[in-house]
Length: 274
Image (cartoon, rainbow, N blue to C red):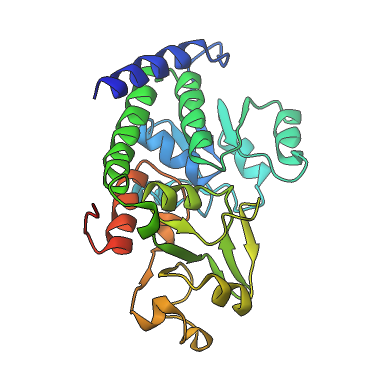
């Protein structure tokens, strides 16, 4: 707990020195990414949010907000909403950011691929909207949740760590590489991710790859059940194939600590290995 307190003080200090400021605290905010929508709501800024994308499903209340597009932004709609701030993840060469700025809008452009990115985004958004302390508190609580799972995982000997395959898409079959936050969650949960040898967020795989790895546990994010060709895999034989709800796991949120505990319990059957 002492370590976590130190982390909190560091986070609070870091949040104070982030060089993001506006003449006035934004009162009309558009979130152009589900991750940023969740962060804004967690920070208590739901009233200031005036627009979100069609993909912003969490929290449920966010679905009632005006829609500003999907992966392609509707700039006309954005202008009609008269935002003080647009928070966006740069797409392609950052053309969406350039376009928004050319329209005279205040833009906060953030990348968010890993858990560390998520924490940094929270601090930067918190700073931008005047909620620095709340941002630090949210990250402190997330770290505390992760710490609980890490303590469980630390009890598992390396030789008893289980191999995990995550199906993030079924056609073509895709899994997560070591640069994905899902891989980070599996590691915190004490598992060995099948894609950790690949320096990418996600990549296509074939049946040969799957049989060579022969996972102890399989998590499905797209399919409802394992493919027939997988019937000789250890996880299928042992009935350790689980469904991960895409709405919960596809987007980083402050529920990640609880979700990681769920992953740990599924991998190890809620057992503590000595």
